[in-house]
Image 1: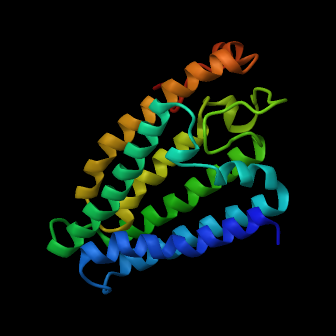
Image 2: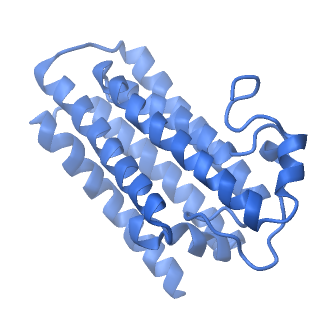
Length: 225
């Protein structure tokens, strides 16, 4: 097995453990069916996308594995990713605390619907990866990289973040929490900050990107932004 596949497999094995710590510890119980269902759905989707990349685009899988504050080159990006990771961890914790103290109740049907939205978001990630082999986990321009204008990139300039926002919206509901939605505010602020910084970088470093901005006007949501 190539080294990158071993790293990806290790990350997948760690995923349910990390989610379990972030969710079950603050929840104070394992009797939390919403969490079990969410972790199963999240893990299955992550596994499917990872296997697809390992088989069809190992170079992109390697780019996706190089992510996190240490992988970023610019101090501002290191800060952005750090705040984003802390905000997302807080989203899980707050949702679990909601379960522990029964602050709110989400109907079971809506919980299942939210898990369906997570699956839909991963389908969106697949469509993005299929179109753009350069969609790494850090802001960079790879030698030979060109502007992608097809598929989801013909609708918005940053479809990966668009699908990510849908997934983040669904996570608290999938965990049975209304209060967890509050953490979407800092997460959204960080994503918008990230997108603006990424656009500045691509305008200067990726040939043809300024023309693409004129062709596709919206960054994340059609007719909104």
